[in-house]
Length: 74
Image (cartoon, rainbow, N blue to C red; front, side, top):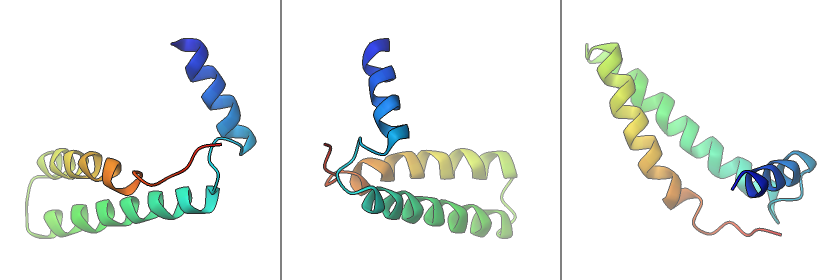
């Protein structure tokens, strides 16, 4: 398992893990933007910060498989 992680990390850092690195960055940026907007909205609605962070983290984590489902690996 650690060998697989090390190999994937090595390829990622060299920029050779994904076929389209721009698509990976775009999808990551969409998820990040949605998370930031949701967090700001929850805090503006006077929700406790800790609860807001937990809810947004759960939502953002649930969004990742949807965003990354069509990415191609080399």
